[in-house]
Image: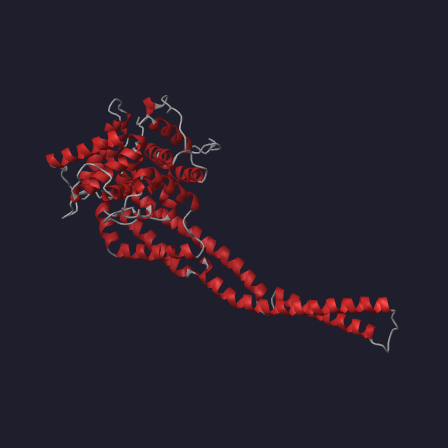
Length: 450
Protein backbone atom coordinates (compact mmCIF):
# COMPACT_ATOMS: atom_id res chain seq x y z
CA UNK A 1 0.00 0.00 0.00
CA UNK A 2 1.58 3.25 -1.12
CA UNK A 3 -1.05 5.98 -0.75
CA UNK A 4 -4.10 7.00 1.21
CA UNK A 5 -6.36 5.83 -1.61
CA UNK A 6 -5.36 2.23 -0.91
CA UNK A 7 -6.32 2.23 2.77
CA UNK A 8 -8.52 -0.73 3.67
CA UNK A 9 -11.96 0.05 5.05
CA UNK A 10 -11.11 -0.76 8.66
CA UNK A 11 -8.03 1.46 8.89
CA UNK A 12 -9.80 4.21 6.96
CA UNK A 13 -12.69 4.07 9.46
CA UNK A 14 -10.34 4.38 12.41
CA UNK A 15 -8.41 7.26 10.87
CA UNK A 16 -11.65 8.99 9.90
CA UNK A 17 -12.81 8.80 13.51
CA UNK A 18 -9.52 10.17 14.74
CA UNK A 19 -9.79 13.06 12.30
CA UNK A 20 -13.34 13.65 13.48
CA UNK A 21 -11.81 14.54 16.82
CA UNK A 22 -9.90 17.36 15.17
CA UNK A 23 -13.12 18.69 13.68
CA UNK A 24 -14.71 18.58 17.11
CA UNK A 25 -11.80 20.53 18.54
CA UNK A 26 -12.72 23.36 16.19
CA UNK A 27 -16.21 23.29 17.67
CA UNK A 28 -14.71 23.38 21.16
CA UNK A 29 -12.46 26.30 20.25
CA UNK A 30 -15.44 28.19 18.80
CA UNK A 31 -17.38 27.52 22.01
CA UNK A 32 -14.40 28.67 24.06
CA UNK A 33 -14.20 31.94 22.14
CA UNK A 34 -17.94 32.51 22.38
CA UNK A 35 -18.02 31.78 26.10
CA UNK A 36 -14.92 33.87 26.68
CA UNK A 37 -16.63 36.80 24.98
CA UNK A 38 -19.75 36.37 27.09
CA UNK A 39 -17.72 36.09 30.29
CA UNK A 40 -15.69 39.14 29.39
CA UNK A 41 -18.92 41.11 29.00
CA UNK A 42 -20.09 40.00 32.43
CA UNK A 43 -16.70 40.77 33.94
CA UNK A 44 -16.62 44.24 32.41
CA UNK A 45 -20.08 44.86 33.78
CA UNK A 46 -19.01 43.83 37.30
CA UNK A 47 -15.61 45.50 37.27
CA UNK A 48 -14.88 48.84 38.90
CA UNK A 49 -15.94 51.46 36.40
CA UNK A 50 -18.14 48.90 34.64
CA UNK A 51 -21.82 49.24 33.77
CA UNK A 52 -23.10 48.05 37.15
CA UNK A 53 -20.58 50.16 39.06
CA UNK A 54 -21.42 53.27 37.07
CA UNK A 55 -25.11 52.57 37.59
CA UNK A 56 -24.75 52.37 41.37
CA UNK A 57 -22.69 55.56 41.38
CA UNK A 58 -25.41 57.36 39.46
CA UNK A 59 -28.04 55.97 41.82
CA UNK A 60 -26.06 57.12 44.87
CA UNK A 61 -25.71 60.63 43.40
CA UNK A 62 -29.43 60.84 42.59
CA UNK A 63 -30.44 59.53 46.00
CA UNK A 64 -28.09 61.90 47.81
CA UNK A 65 -29.57 64.80 45.86
CA UNK A 66 -33.10 63.66 46.72
CA UNK A 67 -32.19 63.31 50.40
CA UNK A 68 -30.73 66.84 50.49
CA UNK A 69 -33.81 68.32 48.85
CA UNK A 70 -36.14 66.51 51.23
CA UNK A 71 -34.19 67.65 54.29
CA UNK A 72 -34.30 71.20 52.96
CA UNK A 73 -38.07 70.95 52.72
CA UNK A 74 -38.26 69.63 56.28
CA UNK A 75 -36.06 72.46 57.68
CA UNK A 76 -38.30 74.48 60.04
CA UNK A 77 -36.68 77.66 58.83
CA UNK A 78 -37.89 77.11 55.27
CA UNK A 79 -41.31 76.10 53.97
CA UNK A 80 -44.07 75.74 56.52
CA UNK A 81 -45.78 72.36 56.06
CA UNK A 82 -49.03 70.97 57.32
CA UNK A 83 -48.81 67.97 59.60
CA UNK A 84 -49.99 65.67 56.79
CA UNK A 85 -47.50 67.04 54.26
CA UNK A 86 -44.65 66.83 56.77
CA UNK A 87 -45.53 63.20 57.52
CA UNK A 88 -45.55 62.34 53.80
CA UNK A 89 -42.18 64.05 53.20
CA UNK A 90 -40.67 62.26 56.21
CA UNK A 91 -42.02 58.97 54.87
CA UNK A 92 -40.44 59.70 51.49
CA UNK A 93 -37.13 60.60 53.16
CA UNK A 94 -37.20 57.30 55.03
CA UNK A 95 -37.72 55.46 51.70
CA UNK A 96 -34.79 57.34 50.13
CA UNK A 97 -32.57 56.46 53.10
CA UNK A 98 -33.57 52.82 52.76
CA UNK A 99 -32.80 52.94 49.03
CA UNK A 100 -29.37 54.39 49.81
CA UNK A 101 -28.63 51.42 52.09
CA UNK A 102 -29.73 49.03 49.32
CA UNK A 103 -27.51 50.75 46.75
CA UNK A 104 -24.59 50.66 49.19
CA UNK A 105 -25.12 46.92 49.72
CA UNK A 106 -25.42 46.45 45.96
CA UNK A 107 -22.00 48.04 45.57
CA UNK A 108 -20.53 45.67 48.16
CA UNK A 109 -22.19 42.69 46.49
CA UNK A 110 -20.85 43.80 43.11
CA UNK A 111 -17.31 43.79 44.46
CA UNK A 112 -17.78 40.33 46.01
CA UNK A 113 -19.30 39.01 42.78
CA UNK A 114 -16.40 40.40 40.77
CA UNK A 115 -13.90 38.60 43.02
CA UNK A 116 -15.86 35.33 42.85
CA UNK A 117 -16.24 35.69 39.10
CA UNK A 118 -12.51 35.31 38.66
CA UNK A 119 -12.89 31.65 39.66
CA UNK A 120 -15.89 31.21 37.38
CA UNK A 121 -13.88 32.53 34.47
CA UNK A 122 -10.86 30.42 35.40
CA UNK A 123 -12.82 27.16 35.64
CA UNK A 124 -14.99 27.67 32.60
CA UNK A 125 -14.10 26.28 29.18
CA UNK A 126 -13.04 29.82 28.29
CA UNK A 127 -10.24 29.51 30.81
CA UNK A 128 -8.55 26.68 28.93
CA UNK A 129 -5.31 27.36 27.14
CA UNK A 130 -6.56 27.67 23.58
CA UNK A 131 -3.04 27.69 22.21
CA UNK A 132 -2.29 24.29 23.74
CA UNK A 133 -5.52 22.86 22.38
CA UNK A 134 -4.85 24.17 18.88
CA UNK A 135 -1.27 22.90 18.99
CA UNK A 136 -2.33 19.42 20.13
CA UNK A 137 -5.06 19.19 17.52
CA UNK A 138 -2.79 20.33 14.71
CA UNK A 139 -0.08 17.89 15.74
CA UNK A 140 -2.59 15.08 15.77
CA UNK A 141 -3.98 16.10 12.40
CA UNK A 142 -0.46 15.96 10.95
CA UNK A 143 0.06 12.55 12.53
CA UNK A 144 -3.08 11.09 10.96
CA UNK A 145 -2.11 12.56 7.58
CA UNK A 146 1.34 10.99 7.93
CA UNK A 147 -0.24 7.59 8.59
CA UNK A 148 -2.50 7.92 5.55
CA UNK A 149 0.48 8.64 3.28
CA UNK A 150 2.81 6.02 4.71
CA UNK A 151 4.01 3.13 2.48
CA UNK A 152 2.67 0.72 5.12
CA UNK A 153 -0.24 2.61 6.79
CA UNK A 154 -1.19 -0.13 9.24
CA UNK A 155 2.34 -0.49 10.55
CA UNK A 156 2.75 3.28 10.82
CA UNK A 157 -0.62 3.51 12.57
CA UNK A 158 0.38 0.99 15.19
CA UNK A 159 3.91 2.30 15.64
CA UNK A 160 2.94 5.97 15.84
CA UNK A 161 -0.06 5.56 18.10
CA UNK A 162 1.91 3.43 20.52
CA UNK A 163 4.75 5.95 20.69
CA UNK A 164 4.79 9.64 19.91
CA UNK A 165 1.26 9.55 18.59
CA UNK A 166 -0.04 8.09 21.81
CA UNK A 167 1.58 10.97 23.68
CA UNK A 168 -0.06 13.47 21.36
CA UNK A 169 -3.42 11.76 21.65
CA UNK A 170 -3.14 11.51 25.44
CA UNK A 171 -2.26 15.20 25.66
CA UNK A 172 -5.14 16.06 23.39
CA UNK A 173 -7.66 13.96 25.32
CA UNK A 174 -6.37 15.35 28.60
CA UNK A 175 -7.31 18.81 27.39
CA UNK A 176 -10.72 17.62 26.24
CA UNK A 177 -11.22 15.72 29.47
CA UNK A 178 -11.16 19.04 31.28
CA UNK A 179 -14.34 19.98 29.47
CA UNK A 180 -16.39 17.77 31.81
CA UNK A 181 -15.77 20.19 34.70
CA UNK A 182 -15.80 23.22 32.45
CA UNK A 183 -19.25 22.92 30.95
CA UNK A 184 -18.71 20.14 28.39
CA UNK A 185 -20.01 17.02 30.11
CA UNK A 186 -21.17 13.89 28.31
CA UNK A 187 -24.30 14.26 26.23
CA UNK A 188 -27.14 13.47 28.64
CA UNK A 189 -29.38 12.04 25.94
CA UNK A 190 -26.65 9.76 24.59
CA UNK A 191 -25.80 8.56 28.08
CA UNK A 192 -29.51 7.87 28.62
CA UNK A 193 -29.30 5.54 25.62
CA UNK A 194 -26.28 3.90 27.22
CA UNK A 195 -28.21 3.42 30.44
CA UNK A 196 -31.13 1.92 28.53
CA UNK A 197 -28.85 -0.45 26.68
CA UNK A 198 -27.09 -1.54 29.87
CA UNK A 199 -30.49 -2.24 31.42
CA UNK A 200 -31.30 -4.41 28.42
CA UNK A 201 -27.95 -6.19 28.58
CA UNK A 202 -28.15 -6.79 32.31
CA UNK A 203 -31.58 -8.34 33.01
CA UNK A 204 -33.29 -7.13 36.17
CA UNK A 205 -33.34 -10.59 37.77
CA UNK A 206 -29.57 -10.86 37.30
CA UNK A 207 -28.46 -7.31 38.09
CA UNK A 208 -28.60 -7.80 41.85
CA UNK A 209 -25.78 -10.31 41.66
CA UNK A 210 -22.32 -8.92 42.41
CA UNK A 211 -20.08 -8.06 39.51
CA UNK A 212 -17.70 -5.36 38.32
CA UNK A 213 -19.24 -2.05 37.39
CA UNK A 214 -19.61 -1.40 33.68
CA UNK A 215 -17.16 1.09 32.27
CA UNK A 216 -18.37 3.84 30.01
CA UNK A 217 -18.53 2.69 26.36
CA UNK A 218 -16.26 5.62 25.67
CA UNK A 219 -13.51 3.67 27.44
CA UNK A 220 -14.20 0.47 25.51
CA UNK A 221 -12.79 1.53 22.17
CA UNK A 222 -9.79 -0.69 22.49
CA UNK A 223 -8.47 -3.20 24.98
CA UNK A 224 -4.72 -3.14 24.54
CA UNK A 225 -5.20 -0.89 21.51
CA UNK A 226 -5.45 2.84 21.01
CA UNK A 227 -8.41 4.47 22.68
CA UNK A 228 -10.75 6.28 20.33
CA UNK A 229 -13.29 7.54 22.81
CA UNK A 230 -14.88 10.97 22.81
CA UNK A 231 -18.51 11.78 23.67
CA UNK A 232 -19.67 12.36 20.10
CA UNK A 233 -18.36 8.97 19.05
CA UNK A 234 -20.49 7.09 21.53
CA UNK A 235 -23.12 6.30 18.89
CA UNK A 236 -20.60 4.39 16.81
CA UNK A 237 -19.05 2.78 19.89
CA UNK A 238 -22.26 2.16 21.80
CA UNK A 239 -22.47 -1.56 20.87
CA UNK A 240 -19.08 -2.17 22.53
CA UNK A 241 -20.74 -1.80 25.91
CA UNK A 242 -22.19 -5.24 25.18
CA UNK A 243 -18.88 -6.98 25.73
CA UNK A 244 -18.38 -5.24 29.05
CA UNK A 245 -21.88 -6.35 30.05
CA UNK A 246 -21.06 -9.91 29.05
CA UNK A 247 -17.87 -9.87 31.10
CA UNK A 248 -19.80 -8.53 34.08
CA UNK A 249 -22.43 -11.25 33.71
CA UNK A 250 -19.73 -13.91 33.60
CA UNK A 251 -18.05 -12.46 36.69
CA UNK A 252 -21.36 -12.55 38.56
CA UNK A 253 -21.88 -16.25 37.79
CA UNK A 254 -24.99 -15.68 35.69
CA UNK A 255 -24.32 -18.62 33.34
CA UNK A 256 -24.45 -22.38 33.88
CA UNK A 257 -21.61 -22.99 31.42
CA UNK A 258 -18.25 -23.18 33.18
CA UNK A 259 -16.10 -20.65 31.36
CA UNK A 260 -12.31 -20.70 31.85
CA UNK A 261 -10.67 -17.31 32.32
CA UNK A 262 -8.83 -17.40 29.00
CA UNK A 263 -12.12 -17.83 27.08
CA UNK A 264 -14.12 -15.18 28.91
CA UNK A 265 -13.57 -12.53 26.28
CA UNK A 266 -14.86 -14.90 23.58
CA UNK A 267 -17.97 -15.71 25.59
CA UNK A 268 -18.48 -12.01 26.33
CA UNK A 269 -18.30 -11.41 22.57
CA UNK A 270 -20.92 -14.09 22.00
CA UNK A 271 -23.18 -12.57 24.64
CA UNK A 272 -22.91 -9.11 23.06
CA UNK A 273 -23.52 -10.56 19.60
CA UNK A 274 -26.58 -12.48 20.82
CA UNK A 275 -28.14 -9.43 22.49
CA UNK A 276 -27.09 -6.68 20.08
CA UNK A 277 -26.82 -8.50 16.76
CA UNK A 278 -24.94 -7.06 13.75
CA UNK A 279 -24.08 -3.72 15.36
CA UNK A 280 -21.71 -5.40 17.82
CA UNK A 281 -19.89 -7.28 15.08
CA UNK A 282 -19.50 -4.05 13.08
CA UNK A 283 -18.23 -1.98 16.03
CA UNK A 284 -15.83 -4.67 17.25
CA UNK A 285 -14.23 -5.29 13.86
CA UNK A 286 -14.12 -1.70 12.64
CA UNK A 287 -13.18 0.02 15.89
CA UNK A 288 -11.51 -2.40 18.24
CA UNK A 289 -10.01 -5.68 17.06
CA UNK A 290 -6.36 -5.71 16.02
CA UNK A 291 -5.71 -7.39 12.64
CA UNK A 292 -2.16 -8.17 13.78
CA UNK A 293 -1.84 -11.11 16.17
CA UNK A 294 -0.44 -9.83 19.45
CA UNK A 295 2.21 -12.02 21.07
CA UNK A 296 1.33 -13.69 24.37
CA UNK A 297 -2.35 -12.76 24.13
CA UNK A 298 -4.61 -15.44 25.72
CA UNK A 299 -6.91 -15.19 22.70
CA UNK A 300 -5.82 -13.24 19.63
CA UNK A 301 -8.23 -10.75 18.13
CA UNK A 302 -8.27 -12.70 14.88
CA UNK A 303 -9.95 -15.59 16.72
CA UNK A 304 -12.49 -13.19 18.18
CA UNK A 305 -13.21 -11.75 14.74
CA UNK A 306 -13.53 -15.19 13.15
CA UNK A 307 -16.02 -16.29 15.81
CA UNK A 308 -18.09 -13.15 15.35
CA UNK A 309 -18.16 -13.61 11.58
CA UNK A 310 -19.05 -17.28 11.96
CA UNK A 311 -21.71 -16.88 14.63
CA UNK A 312 -23.42 -13.83 13.15
CA UNK A 313 -25.19 -15.82 10.39
CA UNK A 314 -26.15 -18.46 12.98
CA UNK A 315 -28.44 -15.94 14.68
CA UNK A 316 -30.88 -16.86 11.89
CA UNK A 317 -29.63 -19.96 10.02
CA UNK A 318 -32.78 -20.12 7.88
CA UNK A 319 -31.96 -16.99 5.88
CA UNK A 320 -28.83 -15.72 4.19
CA UNK A 321 -29.03 -11.94 4.73
CA UNK A 322 -26.94 -12.20 7.91
CA UNK A 323 -24.46 -14.29 5.96
CA UNK A 324 -24.17 -11.48 3.41
CA UNK A 325 -23.64 -8.93 6.18
CA UNK A 326 -20.95 -11.17 7.67
CA UNK A 327 -19.24 -11.38 4.29
CA UNK A 328 -19.26 -7.60 3.97
CA UNK A 329 -17.40 -7.54 7.29
CA UNK A 330 -15.07 -10.38 6.41
CA UNK A 331 -13.75 -8.75 3.23
CA UNK A 332 -12.19 -5.64 4.88
CA UNK A 333 -11.03 -7.69 7.86
CA UNK A 334 -9.23 -10.12 5.56
CA UNK A 335 -7.66 -7.24 3.66
CA UNK A 336 -6.43 -5.68 6.89
CA UNK A 337 -4.97 -9.03 7.99
CA UNK A 338 -3.04 -9.28 4.75
CA UNK A 339 -1.18 -6.10 5.69
CA UNK A 340 0.59 -8.16 8.34
CA UNK A 341 0.80 -11.46 6.38
CA UNK A 342 -1.15 -13.22 9.11
CA UNK A 343 -2.24 -16.84 8.90
CA UNK A 344 -5.85 -17.80 9.52
CA UNK A 345 -6.48 -18.40 13.24
CA UNK A 346 -7.49 -21.80 14.58
CA UNK A 347 -9.44 -22.36 17.79
CA UNK A 348 -8.87 -25.67 19.54
CA UNK A 349 -11.69 -28.17 19.16
CA UNK A 350 -12.35 -28.31 22.90
CA UNK A 351 -12.51 -24.52 23.13
CA UNK A 352 -14.85 -24.34 20.17
CA UNK A 353 -17.09 -26.96 21.79
CA UNK A 354 -17.31 -24.86 24.95
CA UNK A 355 -18.18 -21.76 22.92
CA UNK A 356 -20.90 -23.72 21.15
CA UNK A 357 -22.24 -24.90 24.51
CA UNK A 358 -22.31 -21.32 25.77
CA UNK A 359 -24.08 -20.09 22.64
CA UNK A 360 -26.69 -22.82 23.08
CA UNK A 361 -27.29 -21.64 26.66
CA UNK A 362 -27.73 -18.10 25.38
CA UNK A 363 -30.15 -19.29 22.71
CA UNK A 364 -32.29 -21.22 25.20
CA UNK A 365 -32.12 -19.18 28.42
CA UNK A 366 -31.72 -15.62 27.16
CA UNK A 367 -34.22 -15.60 24.33
CA UNK A 368 -36.18 -12.82 26.05
CA UNK A 369 -33.36 -10.33 25.47
CA UNK A 370 -31.86 -11.79 22.30
CA UNK A 371 -31.68 -9.75 19.13
CA UNK A 372 -34.34 -10.88 16.67
CA UNK A 373 -32.67 -11.01 13.22
CA UNK A 374 -35.93 -9.96 11.61
CA UNK A 375 -35.28 -6.49 13.03
CA UNK A 376 -32.42 -6.07 10.56
CA UNK A 377 -34.98 -5.23 7.89
CA UNK A 378 -36.26 -2.32 9.99
CA UNK A 379 -32.71 -1.20 10.71
CA UNK A 380 -31.82 -1.36 7.02
CA UNK A 381 -34.77 0.85 6.14
CA UNK A 382 -33.79 3.26 8.91
CA UNK A 383 -30.22 3.32 7.57
CA UNK A 384 -31.54 4.38 4.17
CA UNK A 385 -33.38 7.28 5.84
CA UNK A 386 -30.24 8.31 7.70
CA UNK A 387 -28.30 8.77 4.47
CA UNK A 388 -30.86 11.09 2.87
CA UNK A 389 -31.33 14.59 4.30
CA UNK A 390 -34.52 14.96 2.27
CA UNK A 391 -36.24 12.27 4.36
CA UNK A 392 -37.83 13.58 7.55
CA UNK A 393 -36.91 11.92 10.85
CA UNK A 394 -39.92 13.41 12.63
CA UNK A 395 -41.83 10.85 14.63
CA UNK A 396 -39.02 8.28 14.57
CA UNK A 397 -37.81 7.07 17.97
CA UNK A 398 -35.77 3.94 17.34
CA UNK A 399 -34.52 1.55 19.97
CA UNK A 400 -30.75 2.03 20.57
CA UNK A 401 -30.13 -1.45 19.11
CA UNK A 402 -31.92 -0.52 15.91
CA UNK A 403 -30.17 2.84 15.61
CA UNK A 404 -26.71 1.31 16.11
CA UNK A 405 -27.39 -1.38 13.52
CA UNK A 406 -28.86 1.14 11.07
CA UNK A 407 -25.83 3.39 11.35
CA UNK A 408 -23.35 0.63 10.59
CA UNK A 409 -25.39 -0.89 7.76
CA UNK A 410 -25.72 2.56 6.18
CA UNK A 411 -22.03 3.34 6.67
CA UNK A 412 -20.87 0.19 4.91
CA UNK A 413 -23.39 0.63 2.13
CA UNK A 414 -22.42 4.24 1.44
CA UNK A 415 -19.16 5.36 3.13
CA UNK A 416 -19.41 8.77 1.46
CA UNK A 417 -22.42 9.61 3.66
CA UNK A 418 -20.70 9.02 7.00
CA UNK A 419 -21.05 12.65 8.15
CA UNK A 420 -24.73 12.73 7.19
CA UNK A 421 -25.41 9.41 8.92
CA UNK A 422 -23.71 10.58 12.08
CA UNK A 423 -25.46 13.96 12.13
CA UNK A 424 -28.93 12.51 11.61
CA UNK A 425 -28.39 9.59 13.97
CA UNK A 426 -27.28 12.03 16.67
CA UNK A 427 -30.56 13.88 16.20
CA UNK A 428 -32.53 10.64 16.44
CA UNK A 429 -30.64 9.62 19.58
CA UNK A 430 -31.88 12.73 21.36
CA UNK A 431 -35.50 11.80 20.70
CA UNK A 432 -37.33 9.59 23.14
CA UNK A 433 -36.16 6.02 22.52
CA UNK A 434 -38.78 3.51 21.47
CA UNK A 435 -39.66 0.85 24.02
CA UNK A 436 -42.23 -1.30 22.31
CA UNK A 437 -41.98 -3.07 18.98
CA UNK A 438 -44.47 -4.33 16.48
CA UNK A 439 -43.96 -7.35 14.22
CA UNK A 440 -40.73 -6.73 12.28
CA UNK A 441 -40.93 -5.60 8.69
CA UNK A 442 -40.06 -8.23 6.09
CA UNK A 443 -40.36 -6.37 2.82
CA UNK A 444 -36.75 -5.17 2.65
CA UNK A 445 -35.16 -8.48 3.64
CA UNK A 446 -34.20 -9.44 0.11
CA UNK A 447 -32.03 -6.38 -0.45
CA UNK A 448 -30.15 -6.45 2.85
CA UNK A 449 -26.46 -6.96 2.26
CA UNK A 450 -26.82 -6.50 -1.47
